[in-house]
Length: 231
Image 1 (cartoon, rainbow, N blue to C red):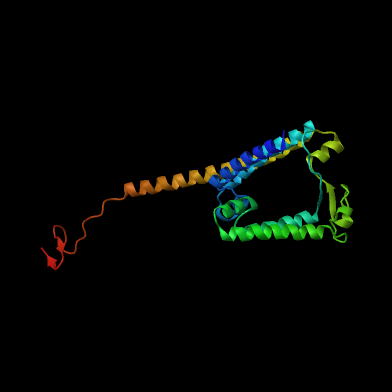
Image 2: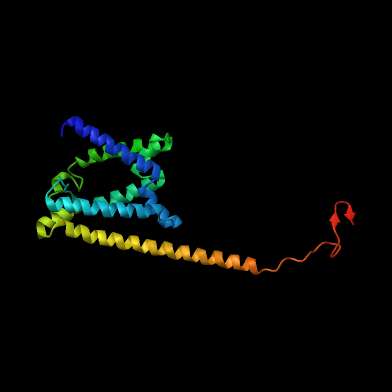
């Protein structure tokens, strides 16, 4: 495929994905924030479905030897970075994907969040090159290195190479775990819906059984109260 053809395909794919994200209002931050704070699981279910599809697809490619899988050390720096990034996403009110969408819609706050995302990435790349920093490239060998707080490579491709088990097997295990979470959310939603239906049915029954209020005009039955007196 020529460079021009690759650019055209990338443009079409990116446009379609961008349109879907913009119309669906999908957001990784909302997937976790809304579930925890508001007990709303719309984005959470969408994220789980996307993760299941991607897990099976990527591990299948790894098993077939296709693609160019990334190999990187997993260490405590990832946990710290993910925590800080999560805090930043909640403060910004959006993930990186939805920040792009909001910026395209003219949201100035999202534009500032996106700008400082790039600044943070630049500063990280500068710090990364310093050898005294524990997760510097010199300390990343793919093997556990506790002195540098690195746990070594950890992904399905690594397990496939070391254990001889196809990567797709680990992908299916992870997919099963994600599906179990999805099913638990669906059961919780169904239980909540059933509870609301029962409450609504009880309210309708109570209203239907309530006797009609008797006339309670000040002058008694048959007396009509009008402005300025009775007649």
